[in-house]
Length: 378
Image (cartoon, rainbow, N blue to C red; front, side, top):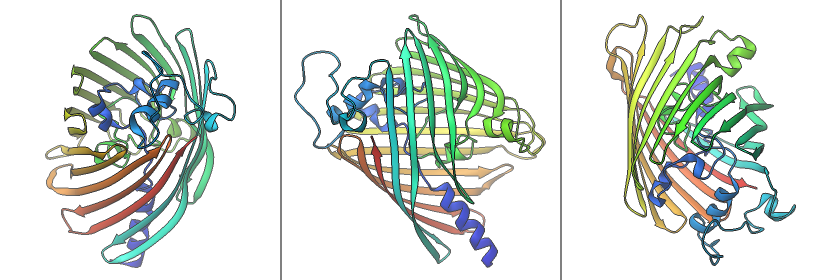
């Protein structure tokens, strides 16, 4: 492998593996089937609601649990409040959070190794919710190949009626499949659903007791709309979720992108199923097929499984085998095995150690990646 290729691979890998924890589908084992149980965003990730903050202490942290204060939602204590209660434990309709993530990254590409320490994230998040309306925004440090910049990469306004009908307008990640915490998962990054792949659009949704339908459409990637980088294309997604039981969920999704200056018209469809046979174990599987106009041969397909087990309260072990093929070449693409240990010792901070083994099925080139991060959610 040439020095130029090494530099390119290492640079891309370093950026790709800068994992940002968002939603955690593994909490299906705790009987949480909807992202909005804990997050303001209908598609998960980002700022926690007051209930989500309280839940992170009562149900997820190793040593944070405190005695119940009676039936119903538990009141916020100082530890789980913004900046550990520096501004009080109740903020009314306004919620604010800070997301900080120092990290260490190590990469081995065909025997060539490199490592770096860096500050992955420093974000300020805020939401205002009243009378069925939610205004949401994030601003912070966005890593780039040439360094980093301060940017506001997600902002939207939503209204939801008492009957469960919602409409959202702004910049957001569209609903598709399962939003795994690791945004580099083959079902996320390879589908243009990475952490900074928000679109400008309109999303309508309908929520029932055991079903959820989300449909979005818009002019495409937000950055492409703003900077005309040749990827701008009309984009539409649809996602239907059926909660089969408190611990089993079926998801069917579709995605369509019109042709842009750089990429032909393309789309995808997928099915995902998650179940939790016991309270400490969750198993998710997703299969997707990608199509692209004027591309001969078979479509590309992606298969992913994520199995998570809570060894003791607050310590989760996850294993995720994945495969992604190339268009027209079912024997090509990449195979990944990801292994992760996630420790949540106290409210709103956790330590995550991950290992990724990615193998090119054509060249047998192997990329090994280690990532350690401290996540502080203040």
